[in-house]
Image 1 (tube, one colour):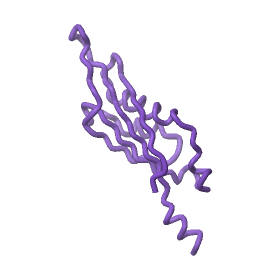
Image 2 (image 1 turned 30 degrees about the vertical axis):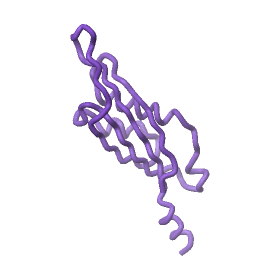
Image 3 (image 1 turned 90 degrees about the vertical axis):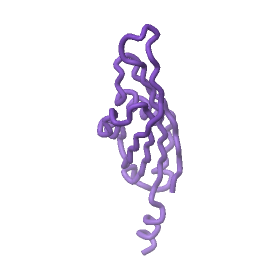
Image 4 (image 1 turned 60 degrees about the vertical axis):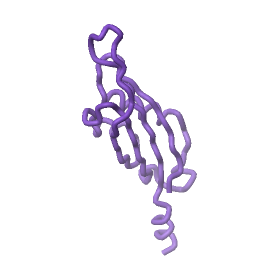
Length: 119
């Protein structure tokens, strides 16, 4: 059951690094809240199932393992989609500014946990 969705945005201003922008977007989303959902429902934090949707202009250039390493706990399922925005430099030289959008949804397997405690 999905309990929370949070959004974030991250950039790579000068390096043109899609992974850096994605990591910053995830951190932005994570640091927007301090809701203790695991404790609220009596779960261990490791039971968090986190769906991560990232939007960037070059999805194949995002290192998913580097993004996964940002999460202190839970099991993130990271999906990278075409989206975000590349902003060209006014002078046309160098890498564009990369913008990544992130949506994080947190869920727990409530039904399976109920069976385990009822059985």
